[in-house]
Length: 563
Image 1 (tube, rainbow, N blue to C red):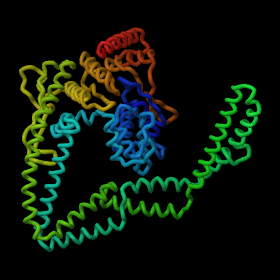
Image 2 (image 1 turned 45 degrees about the vertical axis):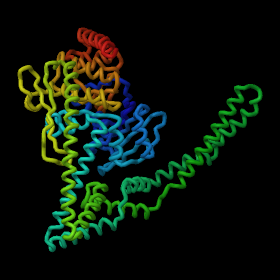
Image 3 (image 1 turned 180 degrees about the vertical axis):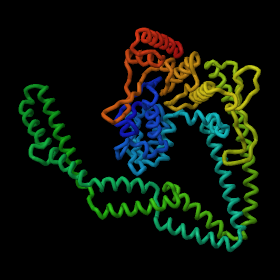
C-alpha cells in the first residue's frame, strides 16, 4: 500500500508531499492543473522512463520518493533483502533522482540499485493504468500480454521457458547460417568483431560501475562544501568551546548532584547523561565522515576520464552500460560461431531439428494453457461487465494458431458484442470509448481478484463514461478498494463522491512562476469540489446542497457495497 509520495522539482512542482489513505483515493482538478504530473511522478518512482524535460525549469536536480507498506507482501520484502535494502517496520521507500544531464540514480530504502531491479520490485507493489494502456487494449497485438499476465506466475514461467527455447533455437540457426558464409566474408566479419571486442574488453566493464562513479564524482565535486558543513557540525557537536556534548555533560553533572533527592531528578539526570553520550557518538560519526571526505582533484579527474570511456562505449554500443556488456557477449558468441568451422554444421543441423520438435511440443502445451486461461478470464470479465451496466454483452478471447515466435505459436484477440444480435468483433471495431473504459476496468478488477498487487492507479479510466455508467464505474473501483488501495484521477463527480480520501490538484501563480499543488479536502472542501465537478458554481447553495446529497448517498452506497 502506498503511504506517501514526495516530489521535488518535477515539472510544475517545487516541493510536495502527498499522504494517501487506505482504500479509495481520488484526485480531481481543473484541466491543466497538473493531475497527470502526480501520476507521472509516481510512475517515475516505480521505474518509468525519465527525461530531462521532467525537471522543473530552473532546477538542476529533481527527485521523487514513494513510501510503501509491504508488511503483507513477503515477496517484496525478500526481493528488497536480496538488494541489500531493509524493510523496517514493514516500510519500504523507493526513489529516483534525476540530474540535468538526463541521468539518474535509483534507490531502495537508501540503497543504490539498477533501474531494472527497481522495476522488478515495484511491479509487486503497484499497477498503473494510464492512457497508454487504455489504447493498448485496442491493439490486438497487445492482447497476448494481457492474457499471459492474468495466467499468473506459473504460467508466465512457462511463457518465459518457451521464449528462452525459441531464442536458443534462433541462435543456433544463426550459427549455422554464419558458418555457411564464404570464407572471405567470415574473415572480414571476424576482424571487425575482434576490433570491437578489443575496445570493449580493454575497458574491463563492471555492472553498476557507472552509477558508483557518478555518485563518487558528486561527492568529490562538492568536497569543499561537504567538508565545511561537517567541520562546522563537528565543532558545534563535539570539539568546539561550548559544544553540545560539553554543555550536556555539565548539565548532567549539575542534575546528578540532586538525583538522590527525588526520582524525577534521577530520571532527568539519566536522560541528560544519555543525551551527552548521544552527542558524543554523533560527534564521533561526524568526525569519521569528515575524515572520509576526499578532495583530491586528480581522483575526480580520473573518475571523469573513466566516465568518458564508459559514455563513449554507450554511444557506440549502448544505449546503456548493460547493453554494452550484452553486446560484448553477443560478439563472443558470434566469434565462436564463425570460428566453429564447416565440420560443426552437420551436428548443429541435427541439434536444430531436435530443438524445433521440442519447441513445437512446448508451444502446443502453451496453447492449451492459454485457451483455458482465456475462458476463465472471459467469464470473470463478463461477471464484472454485468456490474458495469453491460450485462447483455458477449465477450470472448480467441486463441488462434500463429507462426512460432518468442511468445509461442498463438495470436490472441479480444472480441466483443455489446448488443444482443450483433456478431463478435474486435474491440477497436465496435467498442465506444465508454465501453472500452468498462472493459479495461473489468480486466483490472478480475486480475485484482486473483493476482492483484497491493495498490492500483487508474488515470482517466472514466474516458467516455457519464451518467449512470459513471456511478457503476465508481462503485466497481470502490469495491476493488475494499481489498486493495486504489488511486484514481477523475473528472466525474459520481466517482469522486465515492472516495475514502479526496485530493484536489490546483495550479498556483507566484509572480511569473507557475506551479501545481495538491491538498487533501475536508468534508466542506469535498462538497465544494463535487459542486464544481457537477458543473455548478462551487459556492452556489443549490450546487452545494446537491453535492452534499451526492456525498451522503455515496457513503451509504459504499457501506452496502463493502458489507
